[in-house]
Length: 107
View 1: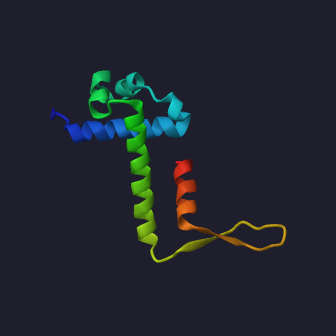
View 2: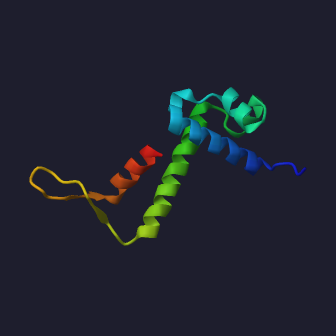
View 3: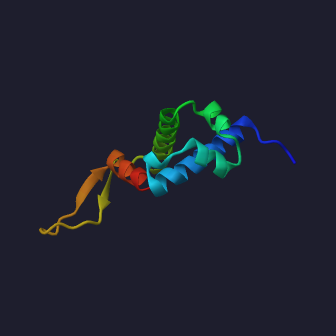
């Protein structure tokens, strides 16, 4: 069996952390539970992310990078018409950063 690299382990921790945050929120992040899920020791999680704040910041950077990549793929559209109707039957436009932030929050 081939040993996993440091990058693979970091990605595995990030994937498990993202799933935990999406399903249970940031407060539910536990290095011990993440280590158990990934199949490593808790100290190994701390090697990649010394604190819970470091892990949270890494997740936030990942969300930002994914959102920016999505936005670049949709360029040059500065706004998007949203199919939400008000009482006056008028649609409204939201800027892309707002749409991406909402989409990332839903992940």
